[in-house]
Structures are given as C-alpha cells and as structure tokens.
Length: 303
Image 1: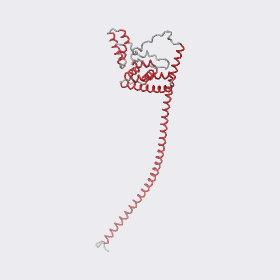
Image 2: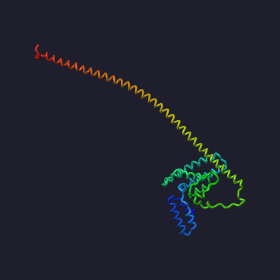
Image 3: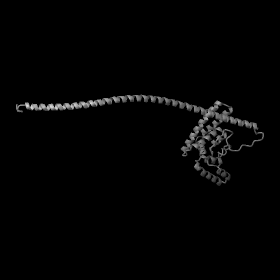
Image 4: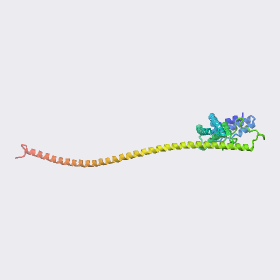
C-alpha cells in the first residue's frame, strides 16, 4: 500500500464517505505495522466541495482537463514569444474552455446528487483558471487530489502545497538546493519577475480585448433586436390606427342604422295603427252589409 494509491482512492470518493474510508485505510496501515504510512494517511484532509467537484471532473473527463493544462503551456509560450495574435486566440480559447468545463462540473455534481451553489461554482472556475495559468497549479489539478480550490494572482508561481494532498510520484519532492554558482544574480531575478509581470499584463490585456469584443458583439445584437422591436412597434401602431378608423366608420354606420331602425319602428307603429283602424272600418262595413242583406231577403222585415 502506497500513500499515492490511498490518496487516489480517497479523493475519488464522495465527501461524506471520505472520513470513514480514510480511517479504515489508516487502521489497515497500522495493522501492517507501517506507522509512518498510517500517520500520513491520517493527515489527508477531507476536500472542500469545490475541490471534490474538480477532482471528480478530472476523473470523469481527464482528456479535457489535460487539454486545458496544455492550452496554458501554449499561452505561456505565446507570452514569451510576444505573439500577440496567437495570444489573443489562445486567450479566447481559454475563456471558452474554462466556462465550458465549469458548466460541465456543475452538471456532473447535480448528476451525482450534489448540486453546487454559484459560490462553489465560482471556486471551481477559479481553480480551472489557475490550472491553465500556472504550471504547478495545472499539475496539482490533474492529480485529482485537491483538498481546497486554487487561485492565481498572475504574479510569480502559485503555491499549491496547501491545497493538494500529495502530487503524483516525483512531483511533490522538494527541489534540490542550489549552489552559489547556480544562483541567479539579483538583476536576473528582477528581470524574470518583470517578464512574468509583463506576461501577466499581456494576458490581462488579451482578456480585456476579448471581453470588449464580446461586449461589442452583445451590444450589436441588442441594437439589432431593439431596431426590430421599434419596427414592429411602428407596424402595430399603424395597424391600431387602421383599426381605430374602421371602428369609427363602424360606429358611424351603427348610428345611421340605429336612426333608420327607430324611423322604421315609428313607421311600423303608424302602419299597425292604420291597419287596426282599417280593420275596424271593415268590420263595421261587413256588419252593416249583413244587416242589410237580412232586410232585403224575402221573408225578412216587412216592406
């Protein structure tokens, strides 16, 4: 049993299973008489939620994470070579890949029944940015053994030893001490520091230019949508005007019909009254004729 093997196992587990599994491995090492390994296993810290998400992403999508770290190497090379156009393109790619992997990490956590908050997602994104910006952070991320999220200030190298349980074999050894002849002069150190700051500034500039281009594209889309909405508004207002004119015409026609209806009702009433009077006259005339006929008939009234 090796510490690296135990670390690989533990940091691949869900957070709520970490402590029990770690204690079991520590007891197993003690039972074998390896007290040093038992102490090292006991010192492995439970990962934060953000660290667990990144560790899980590394295990589920190792190729994508390796491409992200390789992209960081290309960016650093472009910075050293002062290749502006290439730096802009690589920076754009970095932004896209980091955002895509952050979304995938959130989806993965949700799929595993452990959805994360926006704050945790931000820590995951910071870790991925550090992995692409700094070589040490990239190695720590790819180890899949993070205990806490990473961040990178843009100056110097990232200090990852407090955020990773143990690096793969050969990568967590302390650097060999240098002799006086190997030490760089103060001027050389200042020069390298200045170059790192310049590289960081160029990367920030590339980020800002990419963000500005994205914002310009977004603004143009919004302007186009606004223009389309304005045109549609004018069309609807024109249609409203047409409908209002039609409504006024219909109201006018309705008024005329109402007047005609009232006149027709008056004429009908007058006609019905005339009909009633005519019927009355007819009935009287009919009755008179009947009386006269009875009188004129033989055997009727005396002459």
